[in-house]
Image (cartoon, rainbow, N blue to C red; front, top):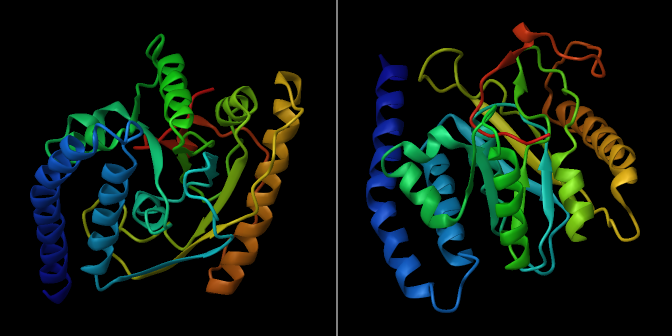
Length: 272
């Protein structure tokens, strides 16, 4: 009974945050439009809505550490491993704005989707011709307006917990526009929600920011090496972070190609 009451309380609080936050975001967008083409202010407000949702959840203890970005308007292509839906709430704690590449279905959800559009997040429809190219064009637009973008290069999250192969999209984008890669490592969110339900579970999670990786002098032929270098850095740091958090993981073959049953449809994605 106590678990059910807490779950109801948290979901009710999240709905209230969205109901109140969406019109506030609309006003912020209207007021800041003349001098904030990158929608930095509205985006930061939206991420803080995510932080507020964590604050009302007694089961979650989320924090961040690692490198502090000295100039929040220096655009990066941020990439992170993907553990669960809760990654969105965790990474939102970082004190700078990033535009998220997200599954287009989320943008159709009342209030949440509307706020995502107001914030300038980027929809992508998997399997739709031209959607990936349009999403990458939107990423270039945000970076040109001095706002970082956030991409999960695994494209989905695995059922078994292994780090899936990274796709090229984020790294080709970084090389193309000359924006440094900003690796982010998350751990502790995988079981923050019970599978196939709306129930929350206890979770102590951390997002750790690694030093940026410059891409000056790199070309399209260098993308695979850059991709694999970043994946190795994230994989190694994830193991360290899991040990710090006391998370037990089973050894897996992280380099194998995932079989269809290893993947689930997810809310945040990457393009090839």
